[in-house]
Length: 528
Figure (cartoon, rainbow, N blue to C red):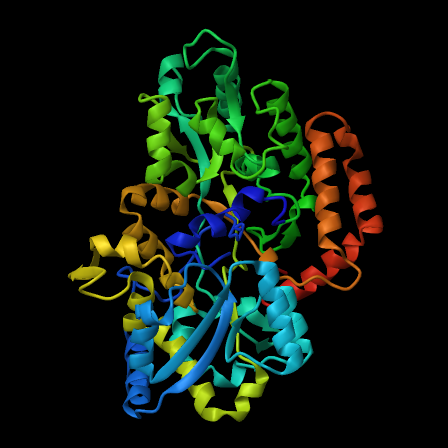
């Protein structure tokens, strides 16, 4: 699914310097509504969590003994220890000597982590690359079962919420701490000045969307007298996420619970064929970017900025952040991009699905640490502290009085916040209250952030899944994408859809994956 929704997968790298923990949404996130546990709007956790965490931290610091903590994760831009004011503040509050090591390359990190675990040189807290690895490490007996420690992790649990902890639960045991949920970023964006030029309104239904896509491609909306405009662009099949949603189905191969409580996979939804038929008709108009399935990276964004496309499926940072807004204005000062609500269709109105099981980070404690009670307690203190008010504010915004001030409960950034706090996300081991954080750090984009978060979305559950033996998700994903492309470009008739499913089940072992996924999700309390 991550490969299919390539646009969502771009977000972690793009936002790393802005405080992203390195996740499709997409985490990536990739794109429904996202909760923030018990986090409050000011960027703090609940008051009881704050009180408990602060009390524990104060007691730890009062002992006067510094306990070394070795932590490793992926990331970048970590300053040297003598310039690391977050480390200094955490060490002072907790009575620790934190040694944080980050690896810019995910592959390099995996290699280093495997070497350390194999040699018994365990970090005291470490990032687990994904849920599949979490399951592997748990089965190998490498991870501390945190279930008996949940009472001691009260502030962390309160901050995250029970639903989040399901992401790191395997066989009814909690083996790691996930970061707090992100929020969806992607929507359709449309050129309002092109709509005005052609006397059109923002499309509210899929039929109106089809008409606007056609008009943008054929009626010279930029007025240059050339046939050089595109109606709709994006990156691969994810471009059509709101169209799938208009038929009441999720993106290809997503699990979700229907209104009647039934757990389904989008590939088996009868309306999936109707959605593919509509997308084929949309492509047949000639208004869809002919390179849509070949677009990689931010090629679709470049087409939008250059004034070649009138509608784009993209995340809010890559069209509304200051540097991109400036580029757009340089090309055409009259260009006006606005966000578009998902178009309505026969199955409802949903933007791209939001993965309720997704997370931008998973942090585990080695089982070996249970033998060192003092050090283990410090790790628990650290997780609780960054989940409470004081610690959460620290790892989000930096030092009060230097990087921000408070106006009541409102965080007011100073000029130094943008200059000096680009690395603080590395210490957000339990995440952050995403909405308030983003709206503080990206105040000019606040309305776009809120718009994307408020759109109706199907809540997919794929992030909770681990793959069974004998199932290769990369091969299955590639096959699904290839066959869907054939359907929407008319190279394969939709009458062969059932044959496609049968081949997927047999040659790709998809039936095994499907049955195992249903069992996993039902064990977590999802669906009938």
